[in-house]
Image 1 (cartoon, rainbow, N blue to C red):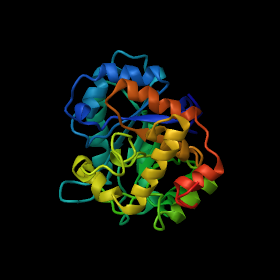
Image 2 (cartoon, rainbow, N blue to C red; image 1 turned 90 degrees about the vertical axis):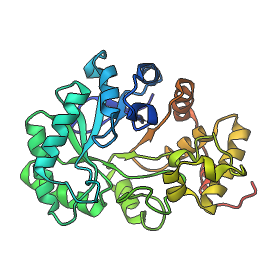
Image 3 (cartoon, rainbow, N blue to C red; image 1 turned 180 degrees about the vertical axis):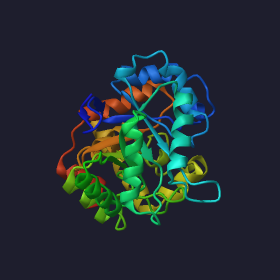
Image 4 (cartoon, helix red, strand yellow; image 1 turned 180 degrees about the horizontal axis):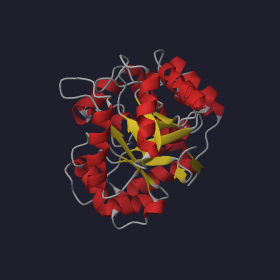
Length: 320
């Protein structure tokens, strides 16, 4: 599998990242066979969060039997409270990372992301707060999830000036499908008109992008067809809210057509499209079927032409 090195991590990370927020892991089940299948497919990075119920404990059960140096653990801290109250504070970050490390059974995370921003706080203050965790060895690299790139740029300019570790990763939504509404409170996307400025920033700076909901919450998983009469009911509520619109259904129709022509799956076509974009991209994928993990990993070997990419993105006529 293609891999890259995040600047502060100093070990390779595959371009596909396993999403540990699936229902089984959130319940704390032993998912060792699933995680083993991911490693066998070349996936060495696993994305979880303090707020994903028992996901960290499920990952930790498996992680304790692995060679730690070969696994990249990504978790997130400082998610807002149940009433939406901001928790981007040092005491919250320390409490979260302490509980995360206990659940994971490790003494450090490889990458620690702030799950949300708090625009009321100076970005400079926040990056200094996260650097304290790096200095203490609790995490190797730091990043952000659902931050605007203007805030990232401000934080990283301060880090450069002060000789601090910068935010090395951003994790917004990105996919062939547009995020038309936030599926959860505070979610940001590089898609659509609202995400255009941040998308251009990521293209220009080559800031690594950990793209969540890369298959739009299952809309592009291949399990559902665009013309399926029961599609609305079968699609999870967050995906219906965030991604269900006529333009995305047309993108799905085109992905289905191209998949048939190429003897590929819809998920492979959509993933290949993402990796055809001028981004330093890492796609976060969710799956509970070991065979499907191997299928998704094969997307990295699939190439699309510019004409095919334009067709999928609705930049070309529907007839090819």
